[in-house]
Image (cartoon, rainbow, N blue to C red; front, side, top):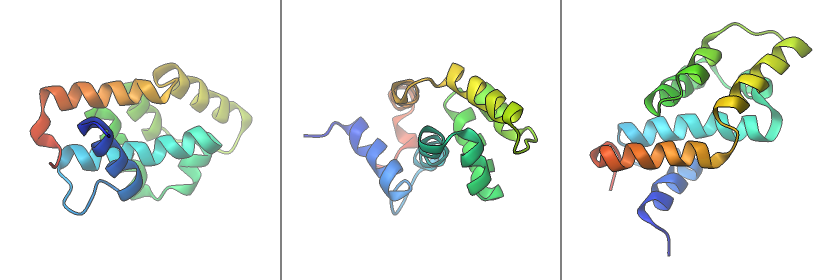
Length: 119
């Protein structure tokens, strides 16, 4: 049996927030899109494959959940160099070293603003 948190998280991760997403669903789905790419191929890879619209949506999503440094990092210019890759990875992993960090931020937001997520 899944918890409400699990259902919302899975809907964001697997279904882009669902058919009628609320603000929180959209922000979670956007953050998770970048996060999943970053965890599998690195932050630089994620930034290279996302569209500009997806990148901006991820920035908004990370800000929504309180990850301001990550959002700022995503707004900075980058190049395909070892130095930039290391900078991106270091900053991202300092802020979100594990999936649980993002999950806990989502749970905290859900606890304080449950109306921001579709039922």
